[in-house]
Length: 574
Figure 1: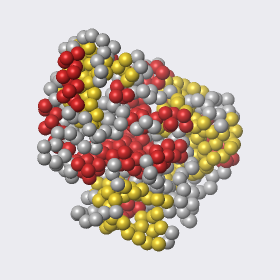
Figure 2: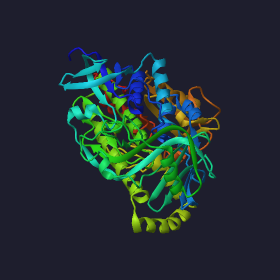
Figure 3: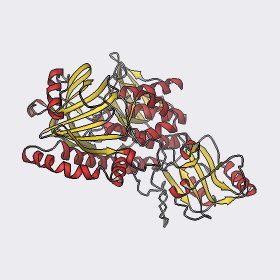
Figure 4: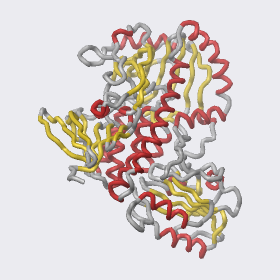
């Protein structure tokens, strides 16, 4: 390979690009991250963080920082013509496989700053005021032309990640189709102080005929987000009819397209206009003030056909945009980065085969398409109705929402969908088939959390963006038996692989063994009888890659050799 200035160039410093940069930094990969903006985003933009994203941040030691900056809400209230008719209350669910059974409302600027601070602690920073103006890929690398302060220069990288939002320059340079269309409705949005009779703790959805309103708490009574349909907007004043030439607003901006004037600036929104429209949707007196951000927008649903073109990858809003319904956009982008970063590191640092990178598209593109289909349904149900259909929706909503609000399994299913906890990846050469086991924790799905003891959870053991070899033993082990397993595991441990034995013991405790005092973890991982054992390989992104239903580690050796071309390798790379 020809000389490269770095291993990976990341274009775009929104949450997706910053997460990719931080994960690559932790893996020791040489990278540069560029953004044409001169300063970090200071707007709230994407404000909903899911449980799955919080689990990722927790594995990196950053979740506590986020929790101090956001507001936890466990309830989504549905209001019809001003009256609450039910909703989702996650306190009623038995969500025991995640430490985060709630929604975190946090401004995107706070999420980005957390990642910026983490990057800075490792000696890296975003190169700002740097605009991508050219890409020339080859079999050996990618030549990148950039414009900084009016001066053109070139750099070379082994790979490029386009995380530069719906307006992506990377995607345009690839002439990569961005198939989809705008929704017909236009919206008004503001981050403001809300004075009204309702509280400031819950996510609220308001329906009143053709008017739809959203209320999202951001900082107690001092700052909230309100959003509502812009019924009076004229469609012909909006951009957004082309598949590949539509202008989009910024990066990772809660996945909406800004309504723009001819000069490219967002159309002006007056506070009084937002107040009138939101009051009409909420059907209660509302006074808005302390404006932080006002905008008009039209949202789109679009997706690329490929996540990878040779040595160039797409992620986040650059690859998929959709309705803000469900708060899926930023969270999907963060998981894109978590899926890709360790694979790049494995190829660059440990000679893993290039075919490993193909699994990024095969795993994440179906997720993007499913997310678009899911948010389309939510959007059409809530905001996509008018005339008699809107009146019918309002008539039927109390009949459906009220009873559903009292059913725990409905609440739990809704939470898991919104939280992205049950995403499954199909079999590929680097993901073992599920086999005949009907265990709830098997290859292709997220490794669930479980309680080990009064003061420790499994996620405490699985912390860190690396591979984990996990041995579970419901069968009680004697001290010599436990010592033998630990000795075998020790040969696997490295900077990129952590090992753990979680077991019940015949007597007391044993150094190095995560001693289990209950059965929670065994039930969660499908060890149904008192002699059951299992071995699992868990990838850096928290997905189970391999499972054996006994304590024999030897079959894992052959599987792990797929992750490295180095002859005789017996450990994975990340």
